[in-house]
Amino acid sequence: MMPINIDLTANSNGAAAAVRPASPRYLKAAELPEVLTEQFEYLLDHAGHNKPGCAECARLQEVVRLLMKPFE
Image (tube, rainbow, N blue to C red):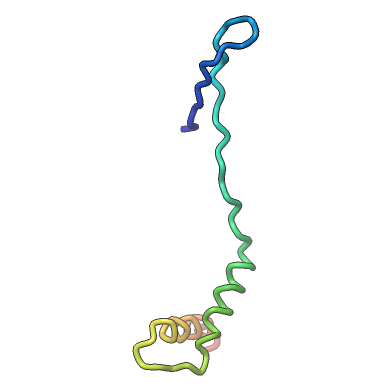
């Protein structure tokens, strides 16, 4: 449902102005290659980190496992 703005100010002939729909403001979604590149760069920061209990290291290992699955 589109939000509606009501402008009750009078126009030049004394009639109330018409109801006009508000323009929605949305951010454009990032392109998929940009998102993937950003995520891989973030995960690769943990390559060689291998600290026990590090959630990001575990996430990197899971991503590598999934990406290598076709080659098993």
